[in-house]
Length: 151
Image 1 (tube, rainbow, N blue to C red):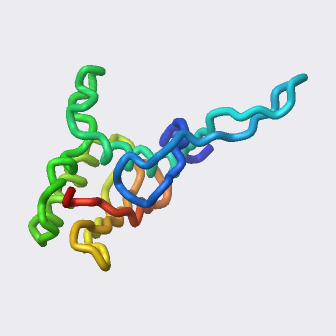
Image 2: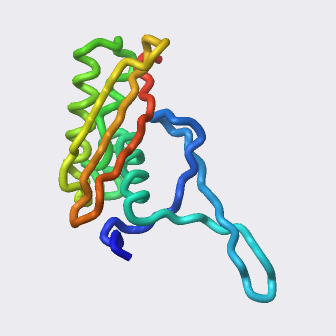
């Protein structure tokens, strides 16, 4: 597989297009000899896995995995909950995303990051992110997804 350096993980099924824990484990049918078809955990690999890994990194508060030996994993986006949707806050969203993605070894560079006020609401922003994976893989688009600011 051309993107094997982007690894494999358990697939999460998106329930809503928001940057908050609205995911569930995905399942896939698996044929079991002499038993028939059973459900098993679905996996995701390559470029799609990189996209899922980025979302999980952004969802996880920085320091949350420190007891497991990963003190810098995660993002500081949770610190922005409760702030007004201003230009300054949107720039902080960009800063926290870029800061978080610097820790992701599978990303060569972020080629596009847009943070815009969500239409029709004052408490949300829409985020669109495009990253270039290491190696020769094509760019990965993540989003657009919504980040809720005001609780």
